[in-house]
Length: 100
Length: 172
Image 1: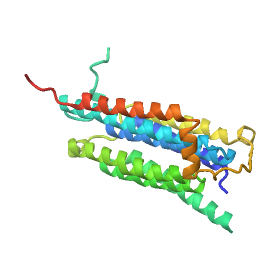
Image 2: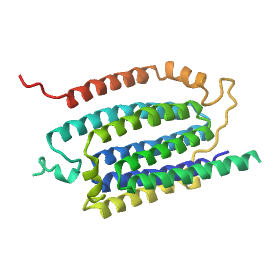
Image 3: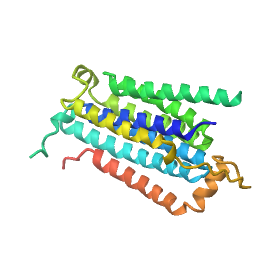
Image 4: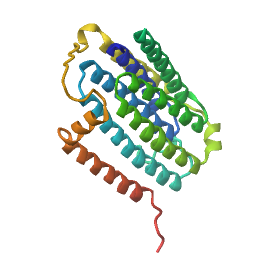
């Protein structure tokens, strides 16, 4: 018997770690990986609620989150490849062309 | 006894996933980071097993650990790693980012307060058990048929978009 509160606490901690990674890291691929950590944190809380309420829909929603994460990884890494072809380096602090 | 074993397994998996997420965010070498994320995904799959989401655990391992992370590793190997690993890990504004992350985690932690949690409603429905393949499949193809089709459309758009964005321009 897993309490739903423990799932929610774990989800909060994992989401915070992912947010720190997304805002703090300079490497653009590791920023995308941090987004995956945050999506996983959300999936943990969805599965916990699904177990608590004995309802299927939380798991279905988590499946859709995984599908969207796959799409996000494909488009994001395509952007990274196009970016690294035009300028070497993966540092987000160098990408200032849109800065006013 | 079984309850105690489940509790021990849950707290081991939770501690393991928090530790591997922290290591993934802080390692200098990007390949090490991605491998720690692999450890995180496997621990999260274990948590899915504990909350009776067997199909979700299988999808987590096959799609996340199997497909998405291999894709990340491929792209990492196409790029210039040694110079990347030599630079500083965190940007200039990382204390602000860390403050935002900690503040969000502290706020979301309060969702655990007993008054906010959903009450247990254990309906002994006669259908298939929670999280089994037949239950998930029945829900996906009846109540969630339209979102399912839209998900396939999103994946198609992502494939086409990735090819268009990443393809090399042909000099004519």
